[in-house]
Amino acid sequence: MKRALRASSRLGDGVRYQQLGVSNSNDLETQSPPLDRTQFDFSNHHEGVSFFGQIRSTVAASRLNWLLVFVPIGLAAHSFQINPLAIFMTNAIAIVPLSVMLTEATERIAADAGDTIGALLNITLGNLVELIILV
Image (cartoon, rainbow, N blue to C red; front, top):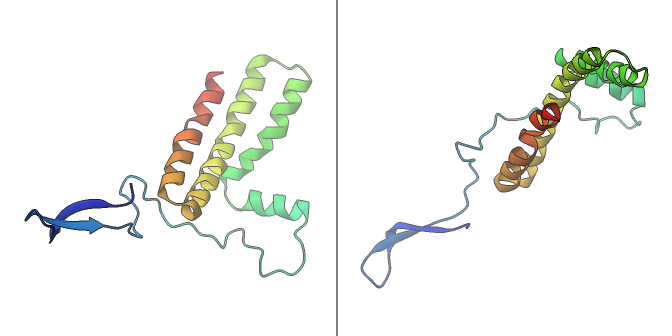
């Protein structure tokens, strides 16, 4: 519901009401820190970014992204049928940076789509890592 009534302007019954419109500020519950949108902004470059250039910029963006190396290691460990504990450990390490990337992507979409869609995405995708580890 985009509008609500509150005490302030007069209606016929003698009670004062005020219409609250949609404000530009976020709720306290869904408020997130401002995102740095220039981190992966390649609009200033006229040439396309290569695949390896994108991989390099993703890995260099955060120290935590170095753990993405465990994604192919976990896939290879499963393919070569190594010890199940080793497979689990490599995939558990690999899911940490993937979870951070999923959270950042959800926040970027929420910043453009609005609070309602952002809250729905956070609710839906927020527990995805826990569900994956549970299975």
